[in-house]
Length: 365
Image (cartoon, rainbow, N blue to C red; front, top):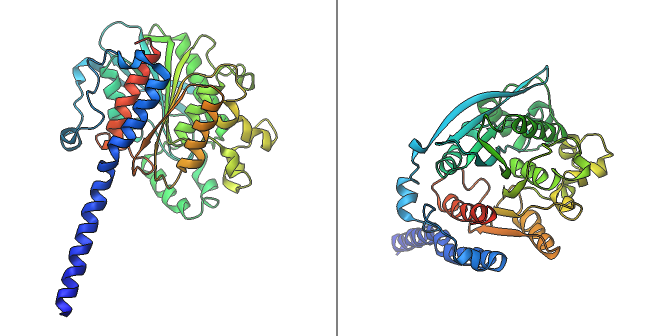
């Protein structure tokens, strides 16, 4: 009898594990349908009649999740570690993914994540994503832009501090200077000026620019998207660039929710009083205080344990759409933070499916 009880417990655990493993896949159709509804509401027949030849045909493929998303690497070239800034203390570089042909090509500027304290371009910034879109005719610029010193930050990061320090030693550039959020943003903005001066050389169509970022990079992407024409950032960005869309993966959109925390207070030190810095570097403030608000697509995991889905994605989406701004929210079922690091997972596939349609629509179909 005792052995039978143990056997039943084991069977029950196995059944639970099987159900848990399949729950995300059961939820995919619902979340896909929700995103499809948003696209139809925003774009109408432009979406339903969009020429999707050459795009991913379905939001999710079991085959691709096993064997990978096919990328034709004959359709682009990559040049790495191109210097764009030396400030006397540190040098900053970008990788250039150039489609075959003369262009000019619509631009993707890719901003890596890492909690503002770790991370890098290249392998630290989902290279298959960059390669995929380069193969589809987008010129991609993947850059590094400085980090806040992990040794300064670790004490204020609690349990994450030691883990971040270990990761930093493996993937982050060895910067000599610590960079606040304001300084990181200024470096990214400076890159757009360099790109403006060299747009012909890099085959870049600055009339059609998309800003992509993940996590802290998603936060940076949100500030670039909403701030590049805002007087708060006057003189920082390229004067001729036109951002057609912001593509934000699991972004912190409202840093004011962290106000008073030693970590974010230090990160946000800058030219304005601290309370104003929190506003200036929060998309939730800028979206209602910018005359130019490009269309936005947010992709966020429903169970993100680092950047809360409800308070950072859903609240922003509701507020932005309530203001009449174009904002789409693609929710990844059972998706945690950095769900797309493995590009071929269902979260990576869903993201790619809707992002390429979003960009095509903003480029005029």
